[in-house]
Structures are given as C-alpha cells and as structure tokens.
Amino acid sequence: MAKNKSLLLAGLAAGAYAYFSKKENRDKAIVAFNNTKSKVNAYIDSQKHQKSDLTPAGHPDPYDIPDNNMVDEGAMTSVQYYNEEVQDKSKKSSKDTTDAEKKSNLNDQITL
Image (cartoon, rainbow, N blue to C red):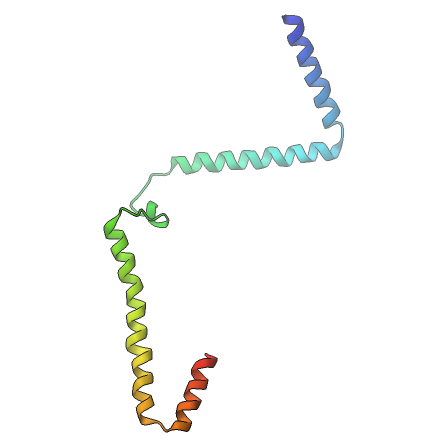
C-alpha cells in the first residue's frame, strides 16, 4: 500500500516537472492561480458584508406587493408627463396653425 502511494506521488511529481519545464506552461499556471485567488477573495469579501434594506433592490420579488406598486406608479409618472406636456402642447398648437404649419410641425416631430 505504501509502495503504491509513493509510486503515485513520484508519477505526479514527474508529470508536474514535465508540465512546468516550459515557461509558457508556468505563465499559464500563474495566471490561472491569480484568477482563482482573486475570485475566492471576492467571494469571501461578499460574504463579509452586512445585508441592508437596499440589498434586494436589483432583484425584484414578485410577491413584494409594495415594491411592485412603487415600480408601477413610477412607470405611470413618465407616461402621465408625456400625456400632459407633449401631447397637450401639440393639440393646442395644432388648433392655432394653418395646414402648411401643421405639415412642418409634423416633419419636425418625425425627425426628433
């Protein structure tokens, strides 16, 4: 049993020596080690942080009714602004203009 373990270790050492004898392979191994080390450190750091009320902001929960209502109202605010400001102004201005001016206003709106 001990002979098998020592034979296995000798084989691993010989394989490692053969692999790392080229500078290109050593450089690849160093880059892979550094990437793995930075990922592990980032994961450990992310586990250390205290979770706050703002943590779930980027991942909405479908069963969080108050949050969903807030998002829904926020979307409606921009639609309401567009309806009141942009469409109402264009309706008021269209009553006061001639047909030629209406066509030029339409062309201006299309190019925007």
